[in-house]
Image (tube, rainbow, N blue to C red; front, side):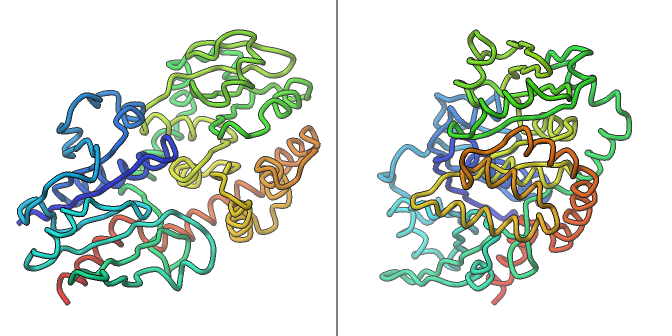
Length: 381
């Protein structure tokens, strides 16, 4: 009998939330044969990742996943509407009628709150904790992705490493991919950097450092990212296909690509500047030097989360730490030329760390398989 799973997603970070949920939904269906319904409130953001998404459709199938436009909390649900496994991403509130229907099911569904990724130590104590409903005979289980054996691991498709290996074995493959996005031979010959960040990143001074530096750099930036700084550099609208060169720096604006193509962009570049959660995880699986731009929180709580990750990942990588802290506004008035030179000089150590880190984290299994195994243990209890 096919297991049914409902995944509820509200889009707060434009692409991070739906990016994570879509990868999870797609992997659950493709690798584990789960009948997945993805409930998402923002189909416009979803369409940027999957161009075939119909933003006007209430119900549609996308790569075997049933996508439902989650408009409000007022729907009426029955026992037959409830899946075997129910996942709320990042503590979203399920529709009250759906929760009431869950309580009437026999057996009751396995209910997860899938939390956001952090390297902080406290998640190990909260992973798999239960939260009984205050009125109904239901129990929610917290499930935390993470970097240790006491967490749920990171999302990773079964074929990911083989796909990356096949892409990188022939250098011409990366060149052909970037050429398909408009890159010229001169741009391909330079150091390649992908840029995906939040609007408050100090992009303009970094562009200045690259422009005036000794190293030819091509910066690939998706349309809609760092728009003000990119337009200031280009001197024209930052639309897909626009490009300009000043000094040693060329900036090229890319169309917003689907997730598989974004993976290839990470593989094809020498350094990746990434943001949020989804692209951050993919950068770790890319095995290339990367710098993380974390989602900002009140009272600078994101700086604590950033440091927690750097304390795990960047041990002995002083230039990575310095650049990351400045990139996230921990250190103001940064010397960007010096920070970039330090990061590039540290590249051999970063490369070695990337390999070791990948092996270390992959040893804990992938998030999807770990979540399903835990759900099975609950259903069989």
